[in-house]
Length: 209
Ligand code: PNS
Image (cartoon, rainbow, N blue to C red; front, top):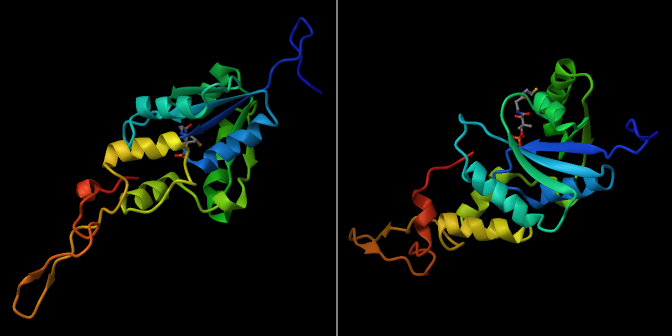
C-alpha cells in the first residue's frame, strides 16, 4: 500500500543510488532507468572520499551526471560524505538502490546491505540487475580501455566520452612509441601514427582506480 502523509496524499517514493561514478557508465544509467520504473524519484549520490584519487573531481562528476540527465526531473544529483544510511535518512529516502552485475559483486554488496540494515533498519537495500550487455562494465574498465585507445562509445553517455577526451587528449592510442632495435642497434621508427604515440598524452598519467 502506498505511504500517505498526514493530509492523505500519497508520499512520493525516493530512492538513493549511491556510488563513486568515476565516471558514470551506461550500466549505471540502466540501473537508474529501472529504478525510475519502481520509484518516483532517484537521487544519484556521489561519495566524497578524500582518500581516493578519482579521475574526475566531485564537481566534474556532478556536472557530467547533470548533463547526462538533463531534462529528467525525477533524477537529482547530490554528494555526500559519512555514513550512507545517515545521508539517506536526512534526504527522506527509505531505499538504497545498488546494481548487481555478477556473482563477484554479491559478497561485498551483501556485507554492505546487512551493515547498512544494522545501522538503520528503516532503510532497505534493493538490488537491480543491469542488462546482460552491461554485466561486465565498470568505471575502472572504461578508463583503462579509453586510456589504451579502445572504443568506449557504446559504454558511456556521450558527455563522458567527451570529458574523457578532454582529460586525456584525443581518444586514441596511448601506447608508448615502439622502439625496436635492428641488428646494428639502430632504432626502427614506428610506422603508424598510433605507434608514434601521436595521442600518447594519457600514457604518462598514472593508472587510476
Ligand atoms: O561505486 P562504489 O564505489 O561501489 O560505491 C560504494 C559506496 C559509495 C556505496 C560505499 O562506499 C558507501 O556507501 N560509502 C559510504 C560510507 C558508508 O556508509 N560505509 C558503510 C557502508 S556498509
